[in-house]
Amino acid sequence: MPHWSQTLTRCMDDLAARIDPAEESAIHSAWVNFLDGRCGEEFFVPPARTPRPPKIDWPDVLLNDAIEDYELMLLSQFRIASDELTAGSSNCLGVRCNYGSGILPTLFGCDLFIMPRETDTLPTAVPLHDREKIQAVFDAGVPDFRAGLGEKVLHCVEQFQAVFEKYPILKEYVALYHPDWQGPIDIAEVVWGSEIFYAIFDEPDFVRSFLDLMTQTYAQSARAWFTRVPPTSNGQPATHWQVMHKGTLVLREDSLMNLSPETYVDLIRPLDQALFDEFGGGAIHYCGRGEHFIPAMCEMKGLHGMNLSQPDMNDMEVIYQNTVDKGIPLLGLDRQEVDRAVKAGRPLRGWVHTDPAKP
Image (cartoon, rainbow, N blue to C red; front, side):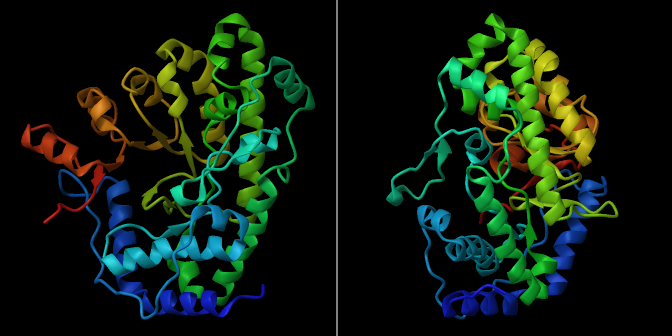
């Protein structure tokens, strides 16, 4: 058992005392019904909790400080769960090893780019921007997961698991979900730099092999994670962010907005499919515009949910036709977009999750 400060102990005691098993079970059951297609309404809003404010003052932890101190990482992440209880929200309770999108790129030797402390923003990684360095990365093969930020992730897992060992109620109702590994194309772009988009056309065979290395590295990292944090079983959904989804992974596809549907189908989709095949499927997140690749993406086996952060940049009718009309859930869709669709008479078929209406 790690040595904990009085602050961490008091905060964990406070959080454990405020969790209501009946309410958490009701939220879980509602999610299971939704993901099984038994919502019963046009869209899904999970049941809300009774607001339960903390009995103590939780510390405010900046992200830069959490990255450098495991106990502060715990306080930062469990504070999110505490805030959900305070607000009486309907969000799922979850925590993660919150080191940002640069975790896997740092395994390949990319430097971490730390934002100024006062911005309270997660770091990213600095691309190599050098073809000779890219060749060296490729020649070295799959890196050790304990390189870069990987070692911090593994140590952080142990800290979370120690909390769950001491507080069974937190282990039962607060999910520890996998870190931000992005997806093969996103990792490749960050490691290489934006020059990769030229290389797709200038040296397609090498890019294909390079992307395969990114996929192998993702898979190795996922195996290391799930060995320590076993995925849900018996068909139970996984928690990620504050939502649930079937399967185990959430792939992030932010770089796809720069590629044609044909390039996606030929170069990227087979890699994502391989990860879904090995790890039991999951959900996909993307930022920006994605209507050009959504039809092909929604043909994937094991795709159990879609999350888009900027619906205003998309032709939502194209999105709806390829998700809700095919029984693929939209997760965390903006409430304004949901209300707009309902007002226009667009059927959502019980496959859209959204936030409660604001008073």
